[in-house]
Image (cartoon, rainbow, N blue to C red; front, side):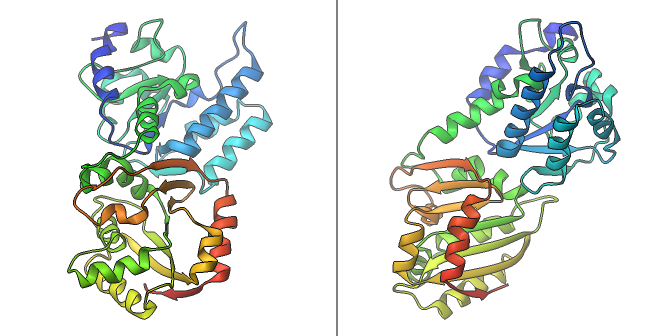
Length: 347
């Protein structure tokens, strides 16, 4: 199979309707970053393409990087200084998710279909230079799926039209409907975000009270069940620090700490530290009336908070939205909550 026949419209339509990742794992053909000058090359357009791609990466992407990163570094040298600086900053910033994959790849990898398909179990999208994608898609297609596989190939400058990204946006634009199973919510929306995050924050005014109430009923609270889920993430992932923010109202903080510690004794895998921040209810409500989960620079707002994980399925519709944080959330929400709180190191 070669040429345009390698693109399967049937596969792309099917996958568009099946959402299961809240981050998009991608590999990147080095030459796509800054193509060799052509008669009608437009440096301003190429810079704009790079800025859009970096925004995609920061908000949604995980860059699966080759252990040998020299081809990317060499490609950066073709860029004007201002654009090169944007990429260099991204490559060292915690705001941009990166993961060293087990496959070493070079420019030639992207011209060889069997080599490209070796990524299909780990990666969602291969971002290609304009001429390279013609090996897999027809002239009028910017992205597509290799026949018989869920690996999407997409032009670097058209990443915001990819099927995976379209699918992700559709999922987050909708509510979590009543009756949705808890494990499906975790898999569809939070597993991938949790896997690649170094720091996770639970900002929920009522979660402390819920921990006590659920324990008295003989079941896990949203917080303790979430900790259990974090410990069950398989494979090589980043060890996480977890921050929990709650109101002191109607709670005994020492009891809350003991119950979280009890869960950690059986669910410690993948978790490096846990800190609880407890505030007066009046102080908490002034700063954060809504409830949030933060995964590094990704903020999810949840209508009913972490209680989403308390029952085996939703007993009502849940609102749930996602946005990127440029640091203002951590400074203006979490930073203020921390200054108003008393903190407890649990792990």
